[in-house]
Length: 88
Image 1 (cartoon, one colour):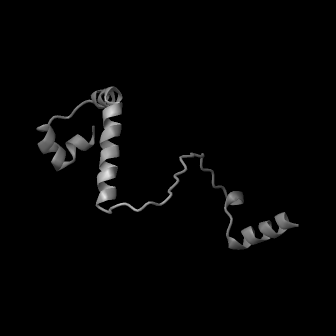
Image 2 (cartoon, helix red, strand yellow):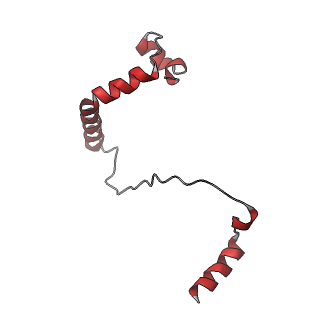
Image 3 (cartoon, rainbow, N blue to C red):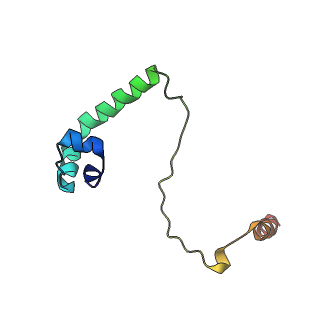
């Protein structure tokens, strides 16, 4: 929704309309199968053109709360000591 008011290409394509986020979400929900097929066809075209290599890629989507107090901030020296203590 925000990109519709920033991106010049979208200005042209949408004739300066800015759809509400709900309209975008509903479109994605109602056309999930068609969108998936479009992405699949796009990947096939890119593979034929040699734009992608067949490599395994894994993305971890885990989210953790960040807490970095002085006691938790380790430098290389502290980590080496902890690894030695753990190995024993």
